[in-house]
Length: 179
Image (cartoon, rainbow, N blue to C red; front, top):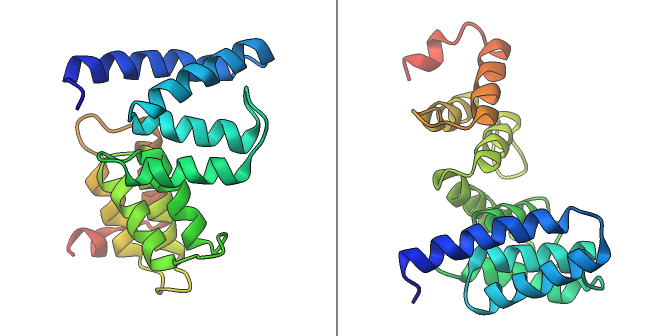
């Protein structure tokens, strides 16, 4: 088990290494991938997600969908799970993009990522509820609640923007406020 100090150091190093992946310089990307892989092998769930992303996109390493999928699933199974991995794997399940797709499981994964505060998961989940899908009818109320609950003191700007867009599309929202 890592101490909070070790987790913070790993998170800071991962942020720098993730930025290195965006440089476009193959040498820099390759070195960053190796260091991210080291963090992943030490149990860092977000590093596991980044390894999966590297393998799937060929960032600093040859593309390998199977290994990428392995790391993506592992990032979701780690405690705590990578929120980004939960969102990606959840969307794959929900959209039936996997051989073993399970839309209910996918929705649950997306909900977990949103409940934990991942802004993009909050926005995606609200859009899924608003538009509905094969599993459920559209629910403007559920979409509103997801966005409204995420608009707290330290809400991400993308969540605030999604909330404002939602309110404009569904004005007047008085019937939602009473629910």
